[in-house]
Image 1 (spheres, rainbow, N blue to C red):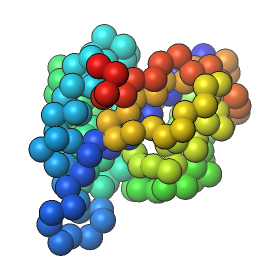
Image 2 (image 1 turned 45 degrees about the horizontal axis):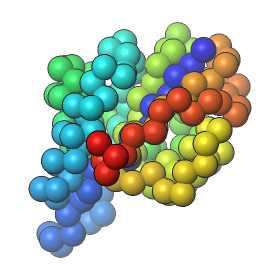
Image 3 (image 1 turned 90 degrees about the vertical axis):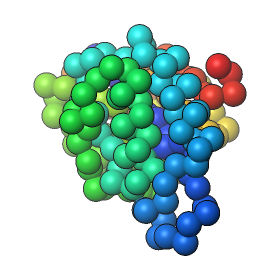
Length: 160
């Protein structure tokens, strides 16, 4: 069994004239990330591997989640390829995970996350919102062989 949790970065700020990857979280985004993180604290496996896009908004979301889960933020591994909006690229990244890892948590971007969730989960989601949290279980021992899984949790800020 493999468990994948995908978390879309929280709401970013468009106030500063910076490149896309350097956009920071908005104050509201920080609050929503903390809110979802606290709500999901007991829903994640502390032995999970944690990967994040290098984009400032995704990495900062990952930091906020781990801090609120009581985890060491050094657990976050930056995976440059997670700075993608394409679900096919996201699929290849997930499938590259080593099989000794049974729990993977990814912090990334849309449309990749929503499209991935709809391809591999069994519940259609129109849009995974910012700070959205989705967990899918796969009945396999190999990440490279994941196929349709079971969506076991969808948590979005507005529902908390």
